[in-house]
Image (tube, one colour):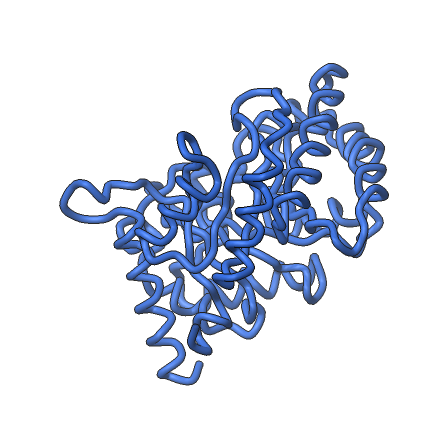
Length: 299
């Protein structure tokens, strides 16, 4: 792996159904030219907490280590610690604990979780108190071998608890800025929330806001997604790299920025590899080309 690849490994969220983490997931990653992977370890739209297969977990962990592929887990989408429904909060706790434990079993470096919603704006303070009450004890269960919990700000739909990057300050404060809490920056979400990455200086401005809110060394993963909608639309609709309103150039700027050194880029773009045009393989290749340009320009 060259220096640029070591600085910013590029990969995608990969499927694991069928032959599992190695047979499906890592095989898919190799097919698209990926250098990093993200997986689900449970149904992303359900509450089930499957035990997993210890032999497959170990095989995946070993293969990732041998190949130098950093792995991440995305927790289920239903998790919402800001919900007024106690049953949702209990299920969210069980689901996130499961993702963290399964992440540790497969050697994942981080577990990504959406930051949630209070459902109505008047409940924000109450919802943030719930985040502290429910998530802080889960963090106490982590040790130095555990994956980081990576907070992913949302696109701003509804009564989001954290969509603008400056909102990360309050969210991290609620968790006492725990040393194993990091940030996953989704470029489509940030763009949708009003951080215009495509504007001149837009990437620098967004990352400055993130660093001010979160502090250094908390940006641990980037979800590299273009946007089908304009900046500030508050719509979470991903597009292939260079095929949306963000455009390709901001990704080069991200790949060159000092704050992203050592941070993997994971694609969650539409996979249309079987058709002419863009797909995961093409998106990986495009990001690698932008990474090479950034390195060549010494930025």
